[in-house]
Length: 139
Image: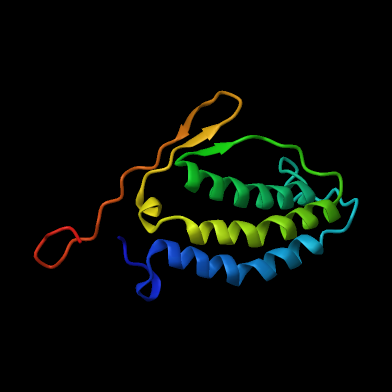
């Protein structure tokens, strides 16, 4: 198991950030004006669409850790920011409970990323090298 911040494993660290960042994420989504067409860059999605990506990414992350593969399906954003915020509120707490229930060993496995249009592998993370002890052994 890879040690991280404050001696936490990866699962504990993500769950810590999951809970800590949720109020700020919710506040950011809630502050997007209804009907706004703002784009951070002319080629980017709108703020409403980006907010929807945040909700979808949380869902795909948890589903992927449970299934052993991240499967992205492009689902159009709801028509209003209110619907997106309602979705965030509806899913976030339950997703946190599902993350908590995932066995710690699952967090150490490689999880491929699949994109729906081609049903093909988009990204396969490389195996992480474990830190070595002063004697040169992997920890």
